[in-house]
Length: 359
Ligand code: ADP
Image (cartoon, rainbow, N blue to C red; front, side, top):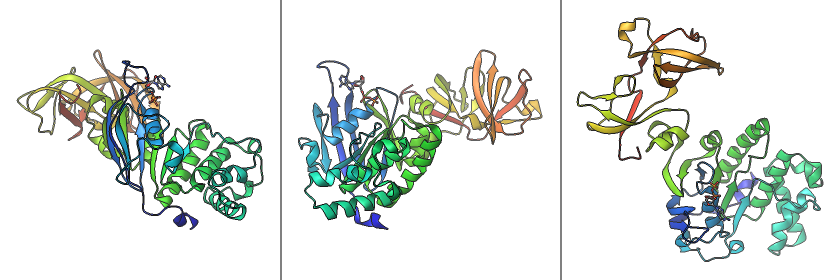
């Protein structure tokens, strides 16, 4: 595979205590961001709009100088280094291709800037077009190819300069859903093959979970939690992360009782957890419920208000008195709006954390 020639040892990239306020004295866009990125892996920066994702990427690229803190590459402080001297590749949402150049000329562009000879440029550019599976488009103009193909050109161009770090800012968000899914799978393959240290910004959690070796969930200029998708899903550190990664029923400001149960607004439920009695927050994922025939074994009774067919599952919007609840059951489960269901929480289904973790 030509990919082996792209990188040598994967780069180690580290952020140390970054802060940034665009407006002096205003709300900080970054408020103490530190992280060591896994070398050779894809780290996805995820969070709602305005949480600081692009600013983190800007600080790494050098386009947004931080107010305090530093960016370190392979043990060297590069905070003051000009963006073009960092040797990073960048792919943005708007492909930013040169419309007057052909596909292969676009990919060659960065190599020309670096002073490579004509033949060498062409060979390397074609190699990148093979890697992104569009060698047949080399001679086309940018306006003669589709959005998805343009994004492949942008990726090929970013890789052509043999970057030490690859930065991607919402690279798929301008594409329609079908194309986005296809390209996401392609990107996952390519990034795995390349083993480049990659920082990938998105607000799309499906994208984050399928591409990221590690996910950084940001909120208000801070990393709220960093970890593998599965850890964030199963063990969120705060109600915010619980609600942001996957669907969740989150109960803030509830109480763990001395008998080991948790007092939720609609029932006291047992929880396997070492959280001591006192204030806590709790989470029930939609898949944590099961129907019981014998209502004596039920934890509570709920009434479906709306039912959505999702394929392998059925999602029900339930109500227990005033309390709304989202639950998912295997397809074929007999559910009818208005007909009460006797439900139990599966063993281990109720997740509890002490209140100081953000509740
Ligand atoms: P995200 O990428 O998560 O949407 P950003 O990093 O773009 O978040 O923005 C973080 C915060 O900084 C937001 O409050 C945003 O309004 C502000 N911000 C971003 N860029 C600028 C800028 N050039 N000037 C002033 N404020 C900015």
